[in-house]
Image (cartoon, rainbow, N blue to C red; front, side):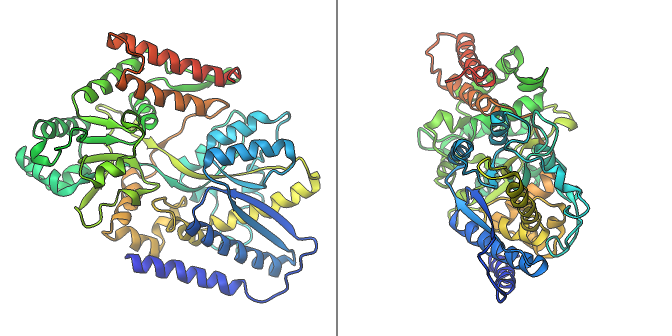
Length: 489
């Protein structure tokens, strides 16, 4: 489905939504207002607003109830978290909000009694009158939670309390992009006859390192003429650390004896970071943290890196346009990684439902009931596809979306964004890892991100690598453990 076909699909759905919103009364008396705080851009917000209008029309016609869902973009995830935590004391809590699982863990940690703020979605998921299989008008396929990618659903259950406290909405992961013409030349020079696409789709860790070494030994030939150019650019220091820990079976964080545990200070993790440091010192890799927090997209599109690893959410920023043709593939898992650990980081948009302590239980229950109906509606097959196509790189969360005729055609196209989405859907194929989330798990992630950055730059000015590692790990542990134990400022 070419770009024009994508637009046709979105406009067709939007047209149906617009038609659905015409006619009928719009009484404002006793209207149920559902605040929905988001992080969305203008285009995604406009599509969401049309879906809100259509949802209100369906509920009015079916039940005679006036419901209005009010999307309210509030900035980034950190800003939204700040607004939500403040709302717990001001009685302004939204019924729905965009959140990372770490944000939800923070909200759970603020509760004085279970369920005070965060709603367990399991109460709705299989309800005979409200669940996914009910109300065909909202979910025409009537397919339930089993239709969602299982690892995405699992993410919403990895909290300290049993239940499901977030629902996946749009998802992303990490992919490796490469300059196809340059890599083709590198393979030819190395005497490798396999076609570039096939080779990169099957590349192993050792093969990639060999290529990086070969490129770096012939920098000028492959266009790396600037002093700050580097063969491989990894966008997220934190994802690099955490993914490598999972694939190598190295302890990172866990949930033990009723509380979160910071486990990343160990010899295996230090050896892993020492290995990354050796690649950095050899001029083979660069990370965002070690390069003044500049995104890899600028390096890639300028031809200053041949390979980049970054999030598929925002893939459009790494599109070189007509400058050169880019290839897309998985970043290879670490050597000798067993199949059960050959998994990738899961990122992207999840939604959570909240109670507002400033209103009555009856009003909260009513808001949550219709908020759930709305979640069911916006995550149905067509609506989920429609919103994902406006998102600059996110994929839908239902298995049925990927076999939908329109989306399948989109995946089959050779456009850059289509190839990115197809690689995520077909090559990574739901193989994502999930760590437990708890109060402070977000700080643990920030802390290990700092380890990579600080070790690569030797921030603490140590004389030996061992001292550098020890200082960086110690600083990270202090930050993470204070947050997990509730003693941070």
